[in-house]
Image: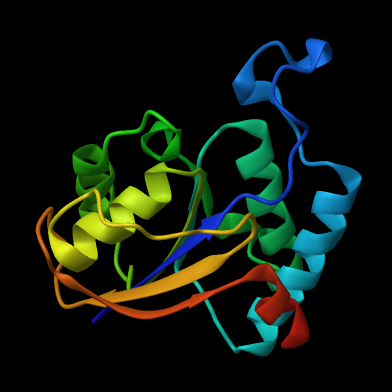
Length: 168
C-alpha cells in the first residue's frame, strides 16, 4: 500500500513583485516560513514518516520542503523534480514515483496549485477536473495499491494548515 502525501507550498511573495521577475524565484514570506514550521511540527505530531520527499525546484516549494526536512531530520530523503512544477507532467511524475528505489511506500510531494488538486482529482476520480481545494501549506493523504493515471487512490484526508498547526 502506498501512502502519497501532497503538500502545497506555504505563503510566498506575491506574483508580479519586480525583484522576483520569474515566478520560479518567488520565495516564502517570513510569515509563510513561520506558519510552515508550525504545520511541519503538526505533521510530526501525527507520527508521519516519509521514505522520500519530492519537491518542485521552484524556490517557494523547495523552501517548504526544506522546512519539512529540517523538522523531520530527513535531509537525505529530499529530491527535486521538474515533474512537480506548475507545468509538470503527471504521467512523468508517476513514472518517477515507480522508479524510486524501494521502499517507496510513504512519499511526500511538495508542489503548487492547481497542479496538486488536478493530480488528487485524477488519482481519486479518474478525471483531473473535479474541484479540490488545497490551501497554502495544506496536506492531503491518498492511499493506493498501485499508482496509475486512472482512478486508483482513496482520499484518506485533506487537512488545512490551521488543522495541522493545532496538532503540535
